[in-house]
Image 1 (cartoon, rainbow, N blue to C red):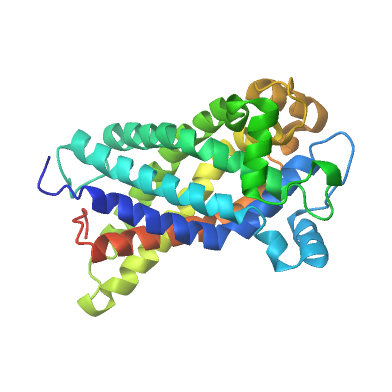
Image 2: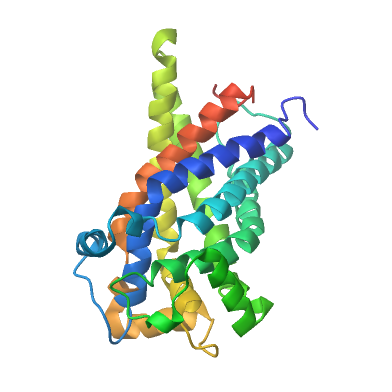
Length: 306
């Protein structure tokens, strides 16, 4: 492997990125999931918007309601982020033949990001299924009390008992599509924004270089997150419905689900939860990138443009 390779350190830095992302973004994610579950159904509770949904959660459950399902999210996101950042960094290094230090190379970035996304979807699918099922059963939920779970472990066990081991992987194909496409869009946007911002800020003094790096990380990560979720939100809507629908024989084809939603609610229905998703995407992904780049620096990982 190239001397610039950092081995396990890339995975450690990715782990820190995942932790930062969950702490920052989980409350927004809870609001998004509730909107996707309830506002796409023909009957049931309807929220006016993300703010109305968040206010209802705070009113009925307090702050802990916004972090419902966070345990499985922390576990899933920690492993997922560690793998996706590690696989992306290592694969990109291999395809480029080392740190390039120049203009981003889409031929290395896109396949590396899509490959990382495909791999982590197998870990992410079960943890997101548990997270989504926990999130939709809040105090204002239409889920009957008898069907509610006391915690993530009970949710996972009951799912396996009633649906078999494949039940915990419900929505796996949709998750794979979302993660492959989403990570390709995220890392491409991140790399290009980062490259052009560093070019413009090259003259910054050494005293302010750390501040510049943080600022670039915030902008490149935040814009990458917005681009990613703008591209894959319809797939995410379909995934939420697949994973939270109680009927075992409900279709798992995301395109059929989106066709049904489009026929009922138009394009707006396919982008249910866009508000909290975009509001979450910037700070959560900015936090992840800043944590990733800071951890990489502390661990002595050599990166281009640094």
